[in-house]
Amino acid sequence: MANKKLTILITGAKGFIGKNLVAFLLQGRRYNIIQFDKENDFSELEVHLKDADLIIHLAGINRPQEESEFQMGNVDFTKKLLELLYRQKRKTPIIFSSSVQASLKNPYGQSKKDAEELLKEYSKKTNTKVTVYRLQNVFGKWCKPNYNSVVATFCHNISRNLPISISDVHARLTLIYIDDVMDAFVNEIESPNTSGFFYKEVLPIYTITLGELAQTLESFKGFRENLLSPDFADEFVRKLYATYLSYLDPGNLSYTLEKKSDNRGYLGEFLKAAGFGQIFVSNTSPGIIRGNHYHNTKTEKFLVVEGEGVITLRNIFCSDVIEYKVNGSDLRVIDIPPGYTHSIENTGSANLVTLFWSNQILDPNNTDTYAMNVVLDKDKKEGF
Image (tube, rainbow, N blue to C red; front, side, top):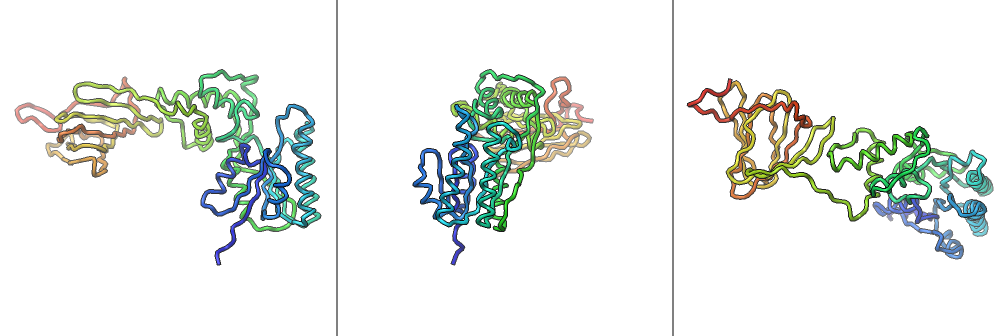
């Protein structure tokens, strides 16, 4: 018989962390998920608790209109949840999302600390596992902007050309990424169910100043115009960029590349990165030849994705011509070494579409491009 699926009750299931967690846990359909949020009442919760093998307690208040709501949302709700478990004589393990502010003396932090103490007492009385994560500032997709996350607010406003407010550009943020929270929770779900009360943290932790955050997000916005890709080798930048894109206006997900057109067809730059080079695309009309030049250091790759053509190369000190027939039905990449003059010709009846990669971003002041025909004219002195 197949193993029974774990049934997980998630409180606060429609909040920022809750929405991500529900989506994360439903991937692969390994768990039964019960969602509980503020539109549900305690009679429903009482029924759900009878089925739950594990509770992930995310529900809480962090930006109330009245300070008293901290007590109601963070302490009283937790107390009611535990009272229902006591009444049902349940010993259900709990994962609780607390806050680093639980170590502070502000009303929010104190309410989280009080909730932790209630859970510690539950763990001791029932000999049940309770794991508490005191979360740093969490960033990622689906966080509400202009609420309690500066990353969400900056992403939303910058992507929509709205102003942002920075009180101190040197103020330092400590951040964790939503998918790292998800990974930590899943690892905890699948860890041995030993009894006890535990504090755990989510790693890695990132730090950045408000000024650096704004500058980085502004650079993401500029990506569409200058085509300069961020440094995705930096995992923090990679996560910030994914977050930024999630806040784009759904009606503004596309942008147009500049085309440089002439009688041969067109060229369009697509993507550039300092450690990568650049990618561009060309459309070449039938019978047209592009190239007939070489590079000293720059290297390239050609990939025809539509149409038929021939790529020719020649070592500039030799007369032998190398020829590769290419077409869009055969995704064949041709490497262009330095010191080889090269060309591409559209030999078909339709347009030839080619992707080019260069290991260098084009510098108009130093193109490293030198004209020389691939096929030598025997009546003229060409080549070296």
